Length: 358
View (cartoon, one colour):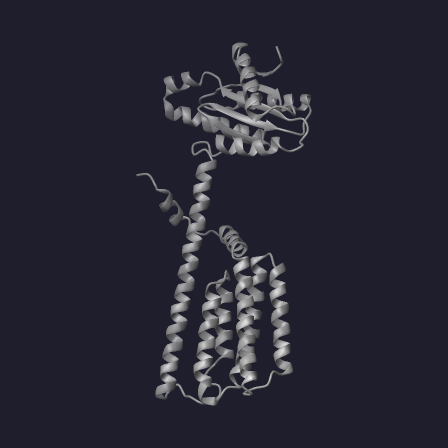
């Protein structure tokens, strides 16, 4: 029974290196949103503080200026933050500062309003943290900081064993549980989708049989390199000699083994260059930075490696090699390399031939 891509993802979900890549990707994609949350949070608090001051409930003091300065500095720091691990700490500091600032303003309101406003501030802060790209430790640490700074029982106006205090406690527990579940579920879904997209991209650009890049990957990467200024560029077309006979005599399963073995030899010999399986028994390698003599030695070494591969079903390869000129397109280079490969086949196989203009 064949495994589906979804089963593969679920069976291998979130290795540590993938989690690190996901966290960084998530932070980069939501960086502007994080800035927006910081700015809106600062703006709402400042507006509320000004309203309270305007009503002569509590004057706009130097402490307000200190909190504003700290939050502005943290927001500016976020603008220059590029690593997700740094944002975890920065967000935690921002939460601590803004919840202290909230308590400062709420304490200026009439005592009978404190409980409602503290719970409202805590719920708003919890929800804001839950939608930000923070790690679990940072999220739970922020939750503790929020409830510590906005604890409605600290002033002694309500007691958890009384009816009103019990209702507030039940609401706080329900709210914390709901937001925690939402945060964990959202992170899980986002991680799953990220992993799925990685697998699908790999399926699109990696040959499933040989596990080396496929034609799509080779054409994309090589075209990008052709647009650069790399010196001494060469293109090699590779074909397995008498591969049809291998399939006819031993079967396609053995043919697959030969393909995988040949791909492994190409990867081992040409690992620093672009290489791929183009289709069937054809492979290609794009080389750069070598003069012609060194390039020919590398190609000859590949022929030798395949020839000397002590396997149950030995094969040889033929290679067509061409210099890629500044005015050559990738299609034109492939045509030249294919012409040279044709000559290598007809001159006896198990060799390479360099394309030369007729």
